[in-house]
Structures are given as C-alpha cells and as structure tokens.
Image (cartoon, rainbow, N blue to C red; front, side, top):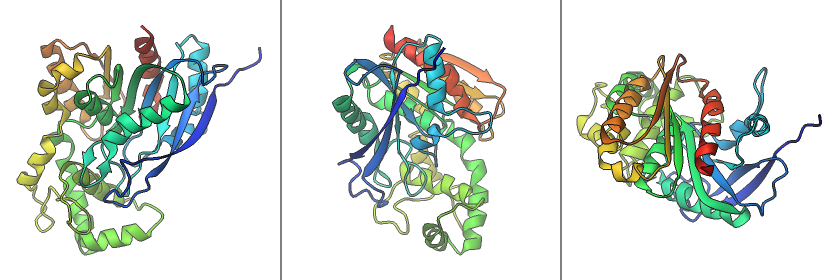
Length: 330
C-alpha cells in the first residue's frame, strides 16, 4: 500500500507585538504548519499550537534521529490510525535568554499577545479553520499552554501540559546556587552576559544561568536595568534567595493562579496534565498540587504520572495530540 504523507509548510511572519522588544530579538519569525494528507488549505480544520520548551523552537520537532521519527512522521501515523484531522502549528519562540514563558513582559516582549492573537490571525489568513484552537507543550511550553488558558479565556478549546513549570518554590531555588557560582566565577552578570552574547555555542555551565536570567526577564522585569532588563531573585554576593524579588515570581506560579482562574479554565472542553515521577526539576510536586486544586474546584482534568524524568518529553505528544484531536472535534 502506498504511503501518503502530510504536508509541512514554512511561513515567515512579521510581528508588531515583537517589534522593538527589549532583548533585540527578531520580529520576523518562522512558522511551520503540518496539514493532514490530502487536505487542502481551503478545508476548515481545528488547529493546535505546539509551544516549544525553554531554549527550544518549533523547527526542532521536524528533525528525526536514530530510532526516532520526526513529529510530522508521527502525525502521519496518528492520522493513518484514525486520529481526527487538525492542523499543527510550530512557532519559533526563541529569545536571547532562551524563552519568554509565553508572557507579556517588559523584560522579554509581548509574547502572550503574539502567540495567542497574532499567530492565530496569521494562520487563519492562510488556512480555513473551525474556530477551535488547542495548545500543547512541555516544560516551559506546558507552562505557556496553562497560563494562556488561564489568562485568555475562550482563546483555546482544549490544552495539554506536560511537566509544566509549577510550584516555583520547589522547582527553581534549588538550582540558584549553581548559577550564582558561574556568575561569580565569570566576574558578575555583566561579564558573563558579555561573553555569552558573543558566542555561538552553549557551555554546559550556561544552562544554570539561563534558567535564572530567562525566568527573571519573564517574572521580575525591570526596564532600564543592565545588562538585562530584570531583577534577579538571588543575591550574587551570598547566594541567598532575594525573597522580595522571588515573591514577584510566585504571582506567576500556576499552582497559585488556579484558584483565581477557575472561570477561565471551566470554559475548556479538555485539560490534560501529566508529569514524570523522576522529574529532575521536581515538577511532579507542582503537577500534583494543580491536579488536587483542579479537583477541588470541580474542573475536569485528565491527570497522570509516568515513570520518566524531565527529558525526552517529546514522546508524550504521542498521547496528548490524539487526545486533543478528539476534544477539538467533539
């Protein structure tokens, strides 16, 4: 039997929301769209946004490796097995500090507006849609799916979050000391940033620092601060947590946001949440707390735990994407 393949289109879109962002990141972005085999742009379909994890981007899902199929290849297989048709959108969400947490922030730019308003408008100008949108992601991408659903009621019909950033007091501070030592050894944040900005590769030690400065630009921005427009949640002299700054981070913790977002979340036709019991960033704690909070408020949530950790989460899409397809076509 001859195999039939879906189509992946690459678009370039210019964003008014990302123009003149504080990190100087490009306002023109690549956007990849997978369409099911044999279905043209004029056929109305639901659409799913796949939000990349921190330091990743949409094009990463197009690659295949040893014993690992690309996401479009897996999508073709899901469709052949009877998955309802939808279009999958893979955006480039990279920033100079690794990501934006899909928030509107004076430290990163207007990424929530871009991903929740401009990207859907652009896609719907090129492809017929049903008006039903889903969002899915892992780690920071899962965080983005959750928070956008909480803050943009009605924008998404269903979402799926794999190991999303949550329970900030558990997941973030244990990694602060490693970042502090890197920055102290480099001669301070300014010296580290000057070196980092001129390199085209990541050192193993960069990840700890990006985890702090990237989140700080999203959660604790400060316009005019140098070398980055943010306040760090840790004292670089002692390594102690700056509780005043960290309190601003906690306002963005989805565990704390759920009680204030029940009306928005109740509008979803489906909410998927899963996490690995061996998560290296301790995100199982936050996911369990969220599942417990959602249950108390009566919001339906498909929650599960698996035996994995935080890495290799792309395989979890094999479960959530067919589930989303069903929710978007019910």
